Amino acid sequence: MSLSILKAGLFTTVQDRGRIGFLQHGVLESGAMDRIALQSANAIVGNHENEAVLEMTMNGPEIKVERDSLIAVTGGGMVPTVNGTAYSLGVPLFVPAESTLAFKPVALGYRAYLAVAGSIDVPVVMNSKSTYVRAGIGGFEGRALQKGDRLHIGKKNKEAMKRFDQIAQKADGGVFAENWGANGSLLDRGQQKIRAFPGTHFKQFTAKSRERFFQQAFTVSTQSDRMGYRLQTEEDAPIERQESFSLLSEPVAFGTVQVPSDGQPIVLMADRQTTGGYPRFAQVAAVDLGRFAQFRPNEQVMFEPITFQEAETLYLKQAQAMRERKIGIALKWKDY
Image (cartoon, rainbow, N blue to C red; front, side):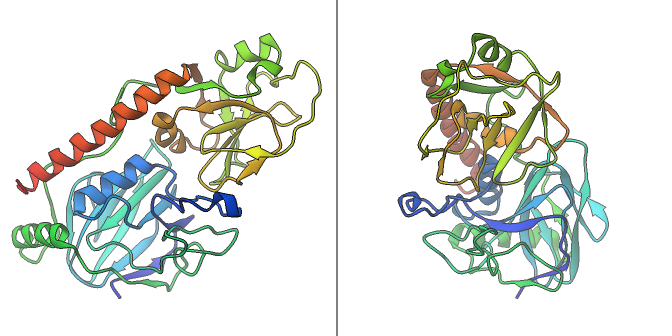
C-alpha cells in the first residue's frame, strides 16, 4: 500500500486512456477526460503514457502518502499541497513517506490528474484500468474513491526508477520540487473558442440555427458529467430542426454534439453511450477535447467552425507537440 485516502474529494476515479476495442460489444471507452493532461503527468514521472492516474474533479482528495514517491499533478482546477505547502502544476515533486498530499482550488480548470512513478496498480479489465462507475467496472472496485480506501503503487519501470532516484537524492528526505514543469495546452495557447466541424445531420437544422451555433455563447449546465456536457443557450434560443425526423441509433464518438428535441445541445464525453438516437449536429475537434473537459458548470463556451481536414491536421500537430514535450521532459531529467 502507499496511498491512503483520508478524504475522498468531490469525485476521484482511476483512469487511463480508456477501454479501446469493445464498442461493438456495447462496452464504453471511458478513460481520462483530459488526455493531454494524463499523458503529460505520466511523461513527467517516467510512466508509460497510458498508465493509470487519479482523475480529480473540482475538489481534490486528501491522501496520506505511505512511502517515498515521485508524483506530478497536471490539468487544472487545483494545485497540490504537501504538508500544507502549495506547489505548481506540472512540476516533478518528491513526497516523503508519511506526508499528507492535498489539493487547493484555483480559479481556472475543473479536472486535475495525479500520476505516481510506478502508476496506480489496479486490475486490468478489458485492456484498461479505467473506472466506469455506472457499470461498476474497472479502476478501484469500479467506483469513485472513498475515505479509507488504500491504493497500491506498481513496480517502477527503468525510466521511472531512474527519475525517482535522481529526485530522491536532491530531496535528501524532505519535500522537493524541480524548478521546471510541463502542463497545459500543446498548441494555440491563446485559443479560446472550441473548434468543431459539422456532423452528419448538420444540414437538417435551420440555417439560422446552424449560424447561431457558432456565434452565440452556451452555458455549461450543472447537469453535466463524464457522460455528457449539457449546454444551455443564453437567450433561450434552441437549435431547431427544419422539420421533424426520426433516427435509428447510430454510433457516436467522444465530442459528438447531439441535439435532442428541446434544442439544447449535449456534447458526449468519455463515459458516453456507444450509440445515440439524437441527431449528430457537430463534432468537437479532438485537439480541443482536453480544453473542453476543463470547463466548469455555469462557465460559458463558444464554438468556432473548422473543416474535418483542418481538425485532422491539428490533431496530427498536437500528437507531434506531445512527442516534443516528452523529449523536452527527458532532457530536463538528463535521460539523454
